[in-house]
Image (cartoon, rainbow, N blue to C red; front, top):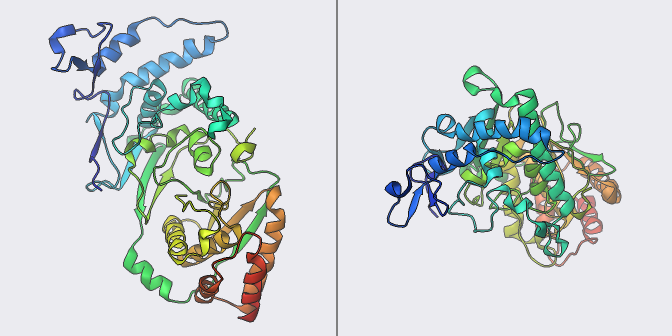
Length: 417
């Protein structure tokens, strides 16, 4: 499906709105046939109005708000074309922004001045309004109030750092900190040849954690181990505690990806580099203080699904030339009901094709699983199996296996090899 090549920003003359309170400085003279006026002068006029402070909000209104206004109004300078290239359209495969350019987009997401990209449902997930409503406290709808509070805290911490540390002043033209969004696609012909050959299985380590968290150590920093997470094909942030929601929601500089990334294809992944996490989230799902196949039962052993998971993971793992290990949790084994035994072996295959080691992080609830995983990895090593044999074992496993039955069956098959 074709998508627009560019996303229109509020600073563009093409971006218009209703002026119900006659705030536009040129008034009726600039109204079009639909009664709309260019948005940017309208916004400039609003920002001239004085801010009303409240007790306890001195820091925000005295230091943070003036910076937000300044950076928001710099959009014509920071993004002079009035539009952003859309990834995957035309020649646009990668976007690189200075921290101030990125901050400008984040501020406008905060102000809710951006339009909904054409490929997204009109559900408000392109800006931060989904976190403002009191309805986000409704757990019955799958929303997580603890998660939303964490995302808002991350956003406010980001604004505070910008105001107090001048961290948004860095510019890529001076060799400073940059934020990059890159669409990476599977090289199909090369992968088919690669997968048809036998390769040694790379190192697989299991790391125990009392609870999942997003601290620097848990994310493999500062040793620069990439963190690979599962995501929906329409990527972004939300109101729950999925891997995707957490890692994007606590990193405001990652949030503009929703403006420039159409639905991911079957063999596409998005890489985000330079986006700083502002808070540490402990736990996952509803415990917080993949583009995945959604089916009942255990779909992981269906051939098409298995191929898709390996392809997707390989695409994510491949190309990190500066690293030797990838950190990840289990993909789709929570709300999506996937089988962790199969998932982790598929990830191991993908990591082996990409010739990188794999670190699987398991929280306390998965420590029993972790020990069984270490047992089967040791057995695979003892039998000196490669990628072709491990793949054959997975392909030949009974399709009616359920969660909890896989280890014993897989162990028997490995033991026979």
